[in-house]
Image 1 (cartoon, rainbow, N blue to C red):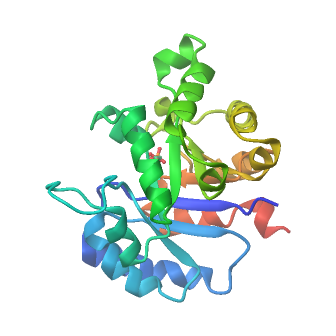
Image 2: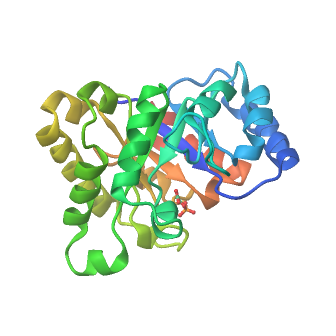
Image 3: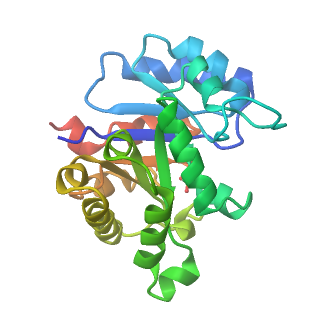
Amino acid sequence: MRKPIIAGNWKMNKTVKKAVDFVTELKKYFIGYSSMEIVICPPFTALSDVAKVIEGSNIKLGGQNMYWESVGAFTGEISPLMLAEIGCEYVIIGHSERRQILNETNEIINMKLKSASTYRLKPIFCVGENIEEREAGKAEDIVYEQLSKGLADLSKDDVSKMVIAYEPIWAIGTGKTATPEDANAIHLFIRRIIGNLYNKQLASEIRIQYGGSVRPDNIDELMSQSDIDGVLVGGASLDTNSFVRIAKFKREIEK
Ligand code: PGA
């Protein structure tokens, strides 16, 4: 059984005060709620204060990025040790905004994935094609390349702790969502690749999230798909009502 995982990626939003007010309110909605994992990924500046507010609650903490070294002369970077010390269980790695705007390559992402595993942080490893690649019929090739290069030299055990997030770039922050069937098809493809790179058991156990304009009005359909195990939410995770509605999606509530 793959436990659903709903993660909020706040990106570069919310001051410390706003973040603390937000989670103080948010945690009330998840008291005694354990049928899925809820993860929030605030900006680095708010992690420490948010960690204190959510301590003992059902909300888990994630970083939005990390450097691959643990310590040293890397001005402006944050290490996996620092994230772990603050109480992060997860870390987003390979988000398309970092690939596109900050020029992260598959090789850099591979170093980060290896390092996160060493420090027992669970990566939310993002993959996904852009619009040109999709229109050229290359979505699967791109996802295959990102997965095989990103996971190079990682063991089955390392990968078993990861979550993979399929985020088609053309759907991020654009209001366009992949149809639930199209998203599910890529999720099945990702499972097949994991099966080929590792084994069938890992392929059936690994959790795969969808991301890209997830909202309260499309969550139920997305989560009704066989191979969508959760969502990585950007814009809609910044508002309490919409994030709570997404986390309390229909299939789960009606169980
Ligand atoms: P969005 O972002 O929900 O605002 O499209 C998703 C993401 O970038 O993870």
